[in-house]
Image 1 (cartoon, rainbow, N blue to C red):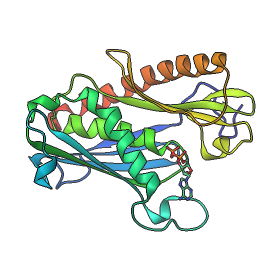
Image 2 (cartoon, protein in one colour; image 1 turned 180 degrees about the horizontal axis):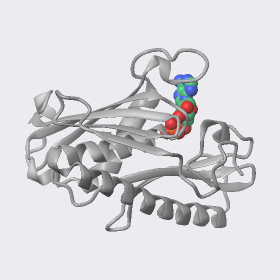
Image 3 (spheres, rainbow, N blue to C red; image 1 turned 90 degrees about the horizontal axis):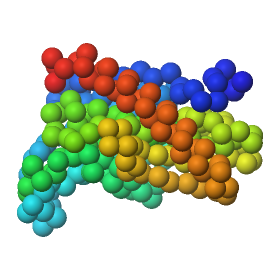
Image 4 (cartoon, rainbow, N blue to C red; image 1 turned 30 degrees about the vertical axis):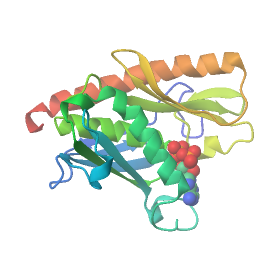
Length: 228
Ligand code: ADP
């Protein structure tokens, strides 16, 4: 039994609310346990600066940010840093294969993600929120993208690690994003040392957890379809 009483393969409780920002074309509040993110999308719209526009497709402009009060302990310095630039890139690359970018040449789709509360897995929560946002905004997509971090802590393979679990001495953490219909991986990252068997087990458990997540995403989207 884990400290929060979950089984090893169990996701944290998930809460999703769509269209929470009136001004945005699509928006989503996504909660995975104590990790909370809000994402909003604008566009397709004109690209700024103009010279980065692409003649045959749109560009996804993703901005990930952690709010100063989102972390435990000391307040985080406000604004963007190296980590937020890396995660913005990772989120964009995880989402791009699912979007029919060729439908929106010379345009930008802007996606802003604000981490309200962080307890590990903020990049995977941001990917889930962003995929739901794009669906809300009616952006043409070939599939949704679902994401989870599976890893090892205290010699066990655990689904959807908390920060406390991630801080274990032997911890490894493998965020993954999947297009569930095509069963294709769009993001796979890992820090630390793991055996091939552990990696296989982590990937298998990630697919099972993502399957569950995709059912949750689809149920929420179906329920809200009249608002989309
Ligand atoms: P992810 O949030 O995707 O797991 P990291 O592995 O970089 O990404 O971060 C793990 C966790 O560490 C975060 O979810 C957050 O709880 C914590 N964390 C990250 N950056 C900071 C920071 N600047 N101050 C305090 N805690 C942080």
